[in-house]
Image (cartoon, rainbow, N blue to C red; front, side, top):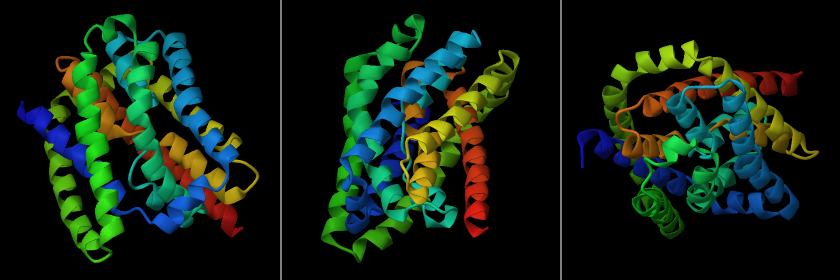
Amino acid sequence: MSPEKLAVVVFLACFMLLAGLQCDFAELREAFQSPMRLLRIFAANFVVVPILGVIVVRLFQLDIYVATGILLMAISPGVPFLPLIAGTKKGGSAGLATGLAVILPAVSIITVPITAPLVLPADAQAHITFASFIVSLLLFQLLPLVVGLFIRARSDKVAPMLTKLVVAVLVVAGIAVLFFLVPQMGKAFAAVYGSRGLMASLLIIVLCAFVGWLLGGKTAEYRVTLSISTIMRNVGLATLIATENFHDTVAGAVVLAYFVMQFIFANLIGMYYKRREAK
């Protein structure tokens, strides 16, 4: 395993372990209280956003690997820090945000192998070895998530201490990933900007916010949470797929560029929601 892939694997595994360790099971139940709301959440994240991604990259006629990086993010929902960025601090629901931080990555283990061949450009699909792809999802996304959930359920004392350690390793792994991919970042931003990929990415991010708000239901706090959580795509998973299957392309760097844009936009829209609630 190359140092680059090792850094990405550790980053994703810590990413998912953290989601499990931070899960509050009392709050997790909130995500399952309404089957219709759960159906809308799944529709927004696993159906509507990938379709919008395909439409937008084709509309802008993007370079194959710029399109691939953007579409990898479109098919990979969920991040473990949703309670911070889409919870009560932003006028949303802490319970729903906690639930989505666990549910979305867990379900994506099933959906990503299905949606990837449907949405990725035909030339990009030829680079993916789906057997190893599925094994990677099980080992580096599902297993750490299950371990985190198990530890949290078994010990309320161990989980907080382990969380601090996982965060520290996550930061180191994240810096290592940046070290390997930053040399490509300039090229990626140039490719994204030069190919109208920047506009395409921003358009998809804005559409994600709108789709989440529209399908969030009548309760304001659920709308806020779903709007922000639909914006935030799983950078760990998308980076793993990109570095494992598109190593000599800008796809991995485009994933990071997309993540930077979605993170900034999610925080801006979160500030807007919070101010509106205060008024």
